[in-house]
Image (cartoon, rainbow, N blue to C red; front, side, top):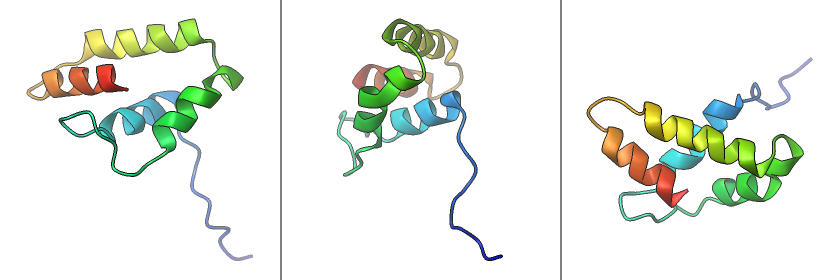
Length: 77
Protein backbone atom coordinates (compact mmCIF):
# COMPACT_ATOMS: atom_id res chain seq x y z
CA UNK A 1 0.00 0.00 0.00
CA UNK A 2 1.15 3.51 -0.76
CA UNK A 3 1.29 6.42 1.60
CA UNK A 4 -2.03 8.16 2.12
CA UNK A 5 -0.32 11.51 2.66
CA UNK A 6 -1.78 11.84 6.14
CA UNK A 7 0.50 12.54 9.06
CA UNK A 8 -0.03 11.57 12.65
CA UNK A 9 -2.65 13.39 14.66
CA UNK A 10 -1.53 16.31 16.79
CA UNK A 11 -2.19 16.46 20.50
CA UNK A 12 -4.28 19.36 21.80
CA UNK A 13 -1.13 21.03 23.18
CA UNK A 14 0.63 20.71 19.82
CA UNK A 15 -2.39 22.08 17.99
CA UNK A 16 -2.68 25.08 20.31
CA UNK A 17 1.06 25.82 20.13
CA UNK A 18 0.92 25.67 16.34
CA UNK A 19 -2.02 28.08 16.26
CA UNK A 20 -0.31 30.44 18.69
CA UNK A 21 2.98 30.44 16.77
CA UNK A 22 1.16 31.36 13.52
CA UNK A 23 0.75 34.92 14.77
CA UNK A 24 3.52 37.40 14.05
CA UNK A 25 4.77 40.05 16.48
CA UNK A 26 1.98 42.41 15.37
CA UNK A 27 -0.82 39.89 15.88
CA UNK A 28 -1.30 39.19 12.17
CA UNK A 29 -1.81 35.73 10.68
CA UNK A 30 0.17 34.50 7.69
CA UNK A 31 -2.84 33.55 5.49
CA UNK A 32 -3.72 30.56 7.65
CA UNK A 33 -7.21 29.62 8.69
CA UNK A 34 -6.11 27.03 11.26
CA UNK A 35 -6.48 29.27 14.35
CA UNK A 36 -9.96 30.34 13.23
CA UNK A 37 -10.97 26.75 12.55
CA UNK A 38 -9.71 25.61 15.95
CA UNK A 39 -11.61 28.38 17.70
CA UNK A 40 -14.80 27.58 15.77
CA UNK A 41 -14.59 23.80 16.19
CA UNK A 42 -13.04 23.40 19.66
CA UNK A 43 -16.41 22.54 21.24
CA UNK A 44 -16.32 19.18 19.49
CA UNK A 45 -13.44 18.24 21.82
CA UNK A 46 -13.57 20.46 24.90
CA UNK A 47 -15.68 23.23 26.36
CA UNK A 48 -14.82 26.90 25.99
CA UNK A 49 -14.03 26.99 29.71
CA UNK A 50 -11.56 24.12 29.34
CA UNK A 51 -9.94 25.83 26.34
CA UNK A 52 -9.59 29.10 28.27
CA UNK A 53 -8.09 27.22 31.23
CA UNK A 54 -5.64 25.46 28.91
CA UNK A 55 -4.53 28.76 27.35
CA UNK A 56 -4.22 30.40 30.78
CA UNK A 57 -2.09 27.48 31.97
CA UNK A 58 0.13 27.82 28.88
CA UNK A 59 0.42 31.56 29.56
CA UNK A 60 1.41 31.04 33.19
CA UNK A 61 3.85 28.22 32.41
CA UNK A 62 5.69 30.06 29.62
CA UNK A 63 9.37 30.27 30.44
CA UNK A 64 12.59 31.10 28.72
CA UNK A 65 14.02 33.90 26.74
CA UNK A 66 11.04 34.35 24.42
CA UNK A 67 8.27 33.78 26.97
CA UNK A 68 6.97 37.35 26.68
CA UNK A 69 6.54 36.98 22.90
CA UNK A 70 4.80 33.62 23.39
CA UNK A 71 2.48 35.13 26.01
CA UNK A 72 1.61 37.98 23.67
CA UNK A 73 0.82 35.52 20.88
CA UNK A 74 -1.47 33.62 23.27
CA UNK A 75 -3.35 36.89 23.79
CA UNK A 76 -3.57 37.41 20.02
CA UNK A 77 -4.98 33.91 19.64
